[in-house]
Image (tube, rainbow, N blue to C red):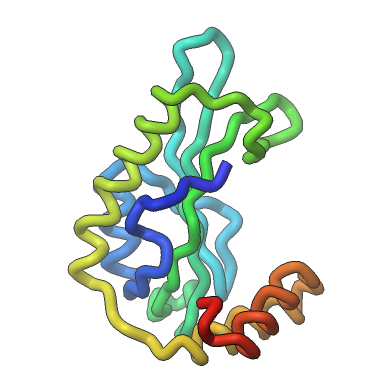
Length: 158
C-alpha cells in the first residue's frame, strides 16, 4: 500500500547522508539497489503470529552513481507491505493493514523524513522527468512512461 502524505516523497538528497539517516533509524539498504535505484526496508512484526510487514522507501538517482556512493536520490512514495513466505512481499490495499500498523509505518517514515529535509536540494522538474522517462524506457515500464509523458505535456497536472 502506498503511504500518502509522509513528507519524504519528492525529497532530493545525496546518497551518503540519506543512507546514514536511514541506517540510524533501523532501515536496511536492500540488496535490490543498482546504479540508479535504492531501496530501504524496515521490518515490522505484526501482533499476529507469523506475520511480518515491511516499510519500504525507494528512490532513484537523478545524477551520479549509487554504486560509487556519489548519487543524488529523488525519494518516491513509501510502501507498506506484508511478507508471504516463500513468495515475497505484497503491497496492495487488499492486504488489510490495520490503522495501527499504518500509523506505525508513518511514524517510522517521519523519523527519517525530518532529518532528510535538512539535506533536500531543489532539482528542476524537467531533470526529474527526463531521468524517470529514461528509466521507464530502459525497463519497458509503459505505465510510468505514459505518466511521464502526461506530466511533460501538461505542466499544471504536476
